[in-house]
Length: 554
Image (cartoon, rainbow, N blue to C red; front, side):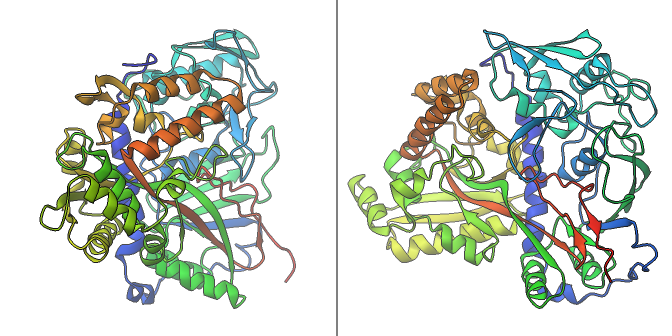
């Protein structure tokens, strides 16, 4: 335990990684031939297209109860039905008040946050919003035991309404990124008249919030939202949204867009389908909306394992890595090479791996291995493990094997291996793998969420490595007391410039010690029909429905 945090996220977070890998892998499993399948969904008539927007997706929500939703499918719906204390300016990582009227006042010790709240806000069922309702919502999020409950439960000590329009939150330990955590869609306000606090007391198919839309239908293949007539903020530019779900079948989504059965397609098309729709848009058939994503892919190196425990070996692997090749071959250019654990979306990101190793620097890799005593006669052998369902991870492992064979002449040999997802994540934190390939999607938009879960270690030593903490859960077992201290400092530092300097130090140490090797960050794509306006993808992958409208021009 460190900074007052326990580690239930070790179990929950890895489930999300597995979900993300499965969804991301769909982008590579289906072949172009699948795209030729015909959809039976007819194009909507002009009458039904006049004031409503139809959005197609393969993402099927498991639940839309904010206290239990921890997957993007559910969070996308929750985001449009609710409001949080803070949110992001559309298309940016800039925080702004939403149900709060201003950024919080923070006590000198960094533990107490006083938050003034908006007045005149009502829930979809007519219940007035106030500080008691907000306190109830946050308490329910923490106490009902849902998948994301640890996000607040590990951080918050108490939540109290200290006035009709004032909320006071006390933390267990100082955490400078706390306002960003409050922007997590599940930390929204819900009507106290419609919900209750209690372990496992969820409503998976309903949500009564304060957001710009209210729910009118929720089923396995569709969700219908109506504009909320009493919404306190900017009214939606459409009268409602029909979310059409094509579960796990990008081919149907692809064809639905091409036949104009949906106005917008988002989450998730294959790389080949994206290429085709980009070509269509160039020919004047539809629009492409592209934005840098915040999901990342990385390689974890177990610092306790044979061969990999030696820093020169880890540095040699970092040197031989060819991110451009991975991006071109696997992602078809639909990603961005990444040279830090922190994506370039954040100003604090530094390309430390590019500065230190470059890409496919085989001469440096050979020198590092030779200086460490390795040769063709005495090679390094490193197993690379990944989930059997991840086609892109399988391709990464195969490319790395071929790179080492081609460029290092047998001094370094990679042995790709795969295993079922459940077994992979069970074994990951037990130290059974020399190296692994995984993906990461942040819980909240702050650089801390790319550092703390990877490098922080609650228990461990330089000799034994990490025995409890983020690096143990991620399979690197990395322990560095200096890094632990720097992580604590940045979590307590309120000055953005000083925080940036601390992150720079952490990233420099990361590149030197190489417990992880960043590979790429995603790009996000949506496609809109001609005449459909206002489609925006946020860096958090939340997707605002209320900005979308249709041109009235023929």
